Length: 327
Image 1 (tube, rainbow, N blue to C red):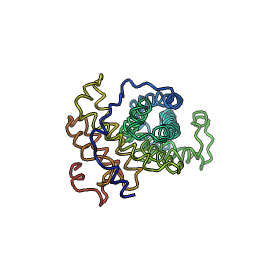
Image 2 (cartoon, helix red, strand yellow; image 1 turned 135 degrees about the horizontal axis):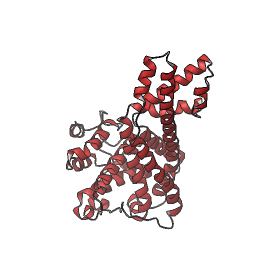
Image 3 (tube, rainbow, N blue to C red; image 1 turned 90 degrees about the vertical axis):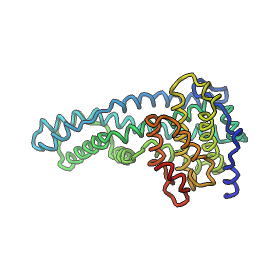
Image 4 (cartoon, rainbow, N blue to C red; image 1 turned 180 degrees about the vertical axis):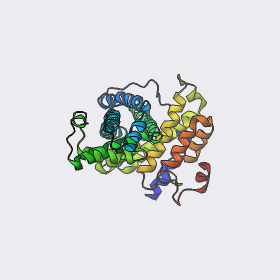
């Protein structure tokens, strides 16, 4: 295993000089079946982000209800404010299950067979683009969730109210008529989902790990090397002027940087020893260097993602120079 990891960690720059057309890649005939399935999920992902960006909690109504526990009007006002928000939260959670279901399909297409990771990236660019868009969505969703404490507050209030009414055996028609159809089991799962600081990353990493476990005929190195190669290709696309000069949209550079960071984080969660050890297939130092060459206001969130959402950064096996780069 150690020799294999060392072999995979050799940095042969030409090997990673691959231009992935993240802007215009279209599926080949062999990609179409998986592509169509994933595209439906990605279309909904845009709606999810829009809904989360405009999510405004019911903090005021909840505080007034808690401060006036005997005022039924305030209780009903808070309940009416929370219900549509809880419906949104249920929708977000249900979408995470769709994401969990589609990730193994993409990974199977990109990691199976006799092709090398580079060959997969060169010949299956539409699926690579979709996997990149999944990573991009995950980072955006989790960033929005972490900066909006109302999400957990709203759902916690909803659960407390439901439990209080159940314990008191109250049959208030106003509450009953305006309830949300969430079973206790689903509510428990939603609580666990939103308790995570980065819930979509947890879904993505768990789904990837399950893919590895459930496909025992596929060596784990197939998956980790594909992730590592994708990270290095993204890094080289930013470093190589000839490559990034081919981008037609200004925000494509930031997209590639987010994908690079997303792959590093996912690799760190899935690989047994993580992304930061010297034997890693990812050039973490080079990736951080690329990030720090960008305007700080553009990439600070991505650097924070590496600092706070990776699993192995603070391990004793992480070189001090890597830790220093992220302090």
